[in-house]
Amino acid sequence: MTESFSTLRINPDRMLDTFNQLALIGTTGDGGVNRTTFSEAHLAARKWFREQIKSSGFEFKTDGAGNHSAVLTCGRSNVQTLLIGSHLDSVPKGGRFDGALGVVAAFEVLRTVKENGISLKLNLEAMDFTDEEGTHLSLFGSSALAGHLHPDDLKNPYSGRENFAAGLARAGLTEEGLLQAKRSKESIAGYLELHIEQGKRLERAGINIGVVSAIVGYGSYRMSYLGRADHAGSTTMEDRLDAGQGVAAFILEVRETVMRDFPNCVANVGKLEFVPGASNIVPARADFLLEFRSPDANQLSQLDLTLTELAEQKAKQFGLQLKAEPLGKHLPNLMSSEIQNAFQKSCHDLGLSSTVLASGAIHDAQSLVDICPIGMIFIPSVDGASHAPREFTRWEDCVNGANVLLQTVLRLAAE
Image 1 (cartoon, one colour):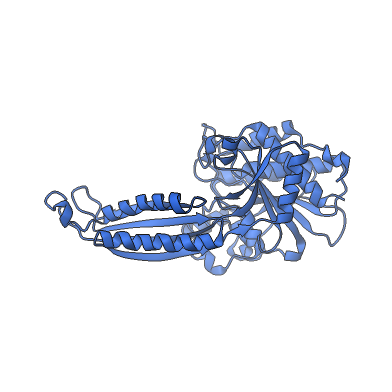
Image 2 (image 1 turned 90 degrees about the vertical axis):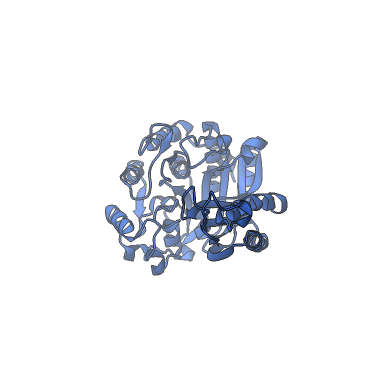
């Protein structure tokens, strides 16, 4: 990379102004945003992004899945495109940095390259993927682009068929269009994404940039413990077949097991319901959802086996029956070693500290892992907060991340 390229930086004031404009769309008034996919606020944010793209002199592009992007062509035919981006949708009452910062930083990279007249060997495209957060279908914009969406996926959206159809109609999309958004592998050179860490590792270590090595794999089960309903006042503790006690013991043992034997992994019981569900009735049934994650495929399999065996052990201990329904399992997605190296070289040249770490959360990048090289960087999250209005990243860290993104794009796409 030439010396003139190595000294190039994004415009931090312009990026901050853009970010602040976006943060007002769907604001909750306490620092957060509420931009669930195809809501009024989400569609307003996408309209704003389209206007920003056109007023800055870029080509605006959309597809059958509603993915929005700014395109900077290199002026040559039959060349590949380097995708950069994230998403503008949010979880309900989420934070203003998650996803949105990645889109704003990608857009600022394109503006910086364009205004400096840099000759490219690749086209650049700043992406806003549809529904990364899974209001309707998790990662469905990036999955559609990668050709991974199947008609069966559309039959049972998280939001329900009626809400899904209404959302598509508001956005001017059709189910047929979603399935036609696939791009050819040959057209894409790679995908880069900047994201807040959503954890405390970088902040605790005082490190500027996390170069992501992998996005964790995960598995999940719908489980039930079946016991017996009894009068909670007159049935002695030793005579109970208490599904509630069984699931409580299981949850605590999961915590101890993962912390002791799987230090790089996590597990969670995030939904729990007792039946009949009254304070004076011993629970006859406990229905719960178990999820677990690991950055290593072999470790993920071992964790799966360990937790399901533990569930059986607790059922036996409390005299219960266990029902377990697998809900899916996804292997870890590895980042491109070439892009990781490019990120690390950019950090070095910028005088920023970096470390290699795995992502415990899912991101659009994993949808593209089998069609192009992918790479991600994290910047520190204050107190690890995310998916909440208190989510915050210092602007200096945002600028550092955007400059690493810029320098890496130049390494990969500039002449």
